[in-house]
Image (cartoon, rainbow, N blue to C red):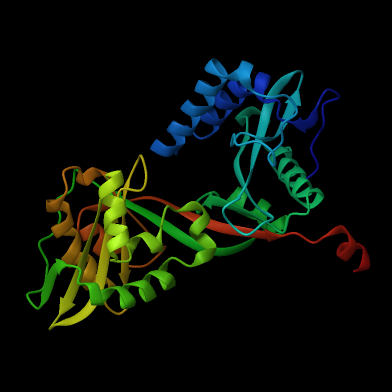
Amino acid sequence: MTALINPTSRIRAIRLREDLRQIADLIELCFSQNIDAEGLEYIRHIRQTANSFSGLILENTTPENSTLPFHGYVWVENDRIIGNITLIPLRAKEKGSYFVANVAVHPNYRGRGIGSQLTERAIRHVREHQGKQVYLQVRDDNEVAIQIYRNLGFDEICRRTMWVYNQSSQPEDSKPSTLKVAAREKEDWSQQKLWLEALYPREIHWNIPIRLDKMEPTFANWITRLMYAEFQRSWSVRKDSKLIGAVTLDHSSEMHDYCWLATSPIWEDEVIRAVFPVIEHKVFFPKRLAVNYPAGRARASFEAVGMRELNTLLWMKHRIIPYNESISV
């Protein structure tokens, strides 16, 4: 879609010293209906940086040479920011990977192709900096945005649902008598790791706080947790003495205590209904418990143990075609 461009409209790089307050207001306005605790914390972080540290921000920084996750581009009209896109290099992932976030357009200016053009500019930025791929996440009910991203060359790589505890519901007491939930045994780790690698493939590790190496039951990991006061517990679920699942509870986020569920599709419903009532009674703050899981799976079982869907996100990827390849084609 081609925007009806106002003579004073333009896309430019974000200027951190002068733009952050407007960007925070715009993001809060655009996502007010669906924003979660992590999103609110991100907005608070933007405002805190603008209010307390703007004078310390170096001029002419870019996503590549700054540690602040606020860089990207804005759409400016009549000296007012009405569109924003954030572009974050994924330094811990494969070199050349970027994450697009906070594609926000003021409600009064939607339908003009502003979001599409901002995203195109971000893709061009990545190509200009020899990037290899761009990732993004979008709610599965945002059909307009999904179509825009598909038109720009993004492909869906997976759908993930975040489940959190719903304190207003009463979990069902439905653990089959043949199932036993107990502390994980050391010999369970090899199978747990295989299940985790299948449920949480490496390509999605960039935006979930999973640390497989920290879950292994080694003396070194135990000492590290003791030294740094890191909280982690693991349970195994057995059916007639056969291991059918495991869960590691990890305090790996300020907002959530993640339960990394490891099992097979064959047993996932039984495991969920058996282990989560146990975990809920073993922790002080069950409302912090969260599970990131493939969308569409085990919905009835998560709801039966008192969980609710926080959101379901499409994870999408755009592979960057270098200029020389696009010309030769």
